[in-house]
Length: 338
Ligand code: ASP
Image (cartoon, rainbow, N blue to C red):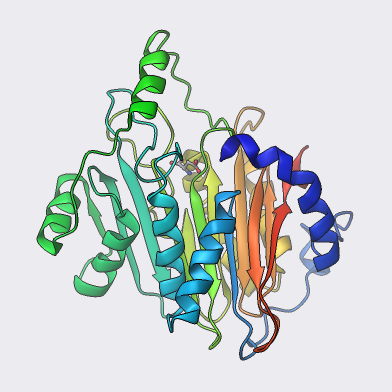
């Protein structure tokens, strides 16, 4: 999937133009004086789903299908994430994800709803659908986060399939990497495509999710931003949601998704908030070799995305009224090149 991402960018830019996205790039985004007012109320019958990278297109399709079958925003998120987790060709999420330096595929995921309920699993192995495990943590336990062997044990208790996730393709890539073992904790945007998903259903309920195999060839035990509530994902039902992709260490240090939502609370649009959260990283650490992209969905259905460097895109599906068809677009959010 990653290899085809760039081919979409030109087309995406054109679609973004028709949707009115990315048209205010020259404004001084980071100055609060230029922010509008915080998101207004959601409109009935206007569902939206947005997800990172190319695989977000299929994830959003699955999400809208879940909605049309009577599901909620949370169901949209889980359905979209599961679809991408099940793709054994994807090297960054679920089965087929690239392993850590010791050859173990370890997964991180979280989910959050408009009420502030959240569930998360991290450093979990052999569980094909960590997003569903995270949802069970949220729905059925008194906890927010389960890690490692305990998370896997809980998956077994729930009767979830527990199966090795290292595919032949990923194993061969790991073997090739081991010839040099050149470990750099740097995101190469061509092969680290965490999926972050944000949705609003027809009742205006918001939800979000994030699922990943994390940075390839990471140290065994390393956990990134993706399962951390406030870092890889944050949802506030009264304001909006945000999710992150890229080098988790930079996102965690700046509590990125929480920051995006708090900026929206203070009056920034989804786009302005993502821009400002990216500036926060740029101001606080060297960023030549690291990529972070943020995606946000306001309670009013506004969507924004921004990244440190070019190459970041996201998929957007929206239904503008109860009886219009779903519009689908892949948006180039690579304006962040600096
Ligand atoms: N954010 C993820 C992590 O640091 C990686 C990614 O987005 O690809 O684990």
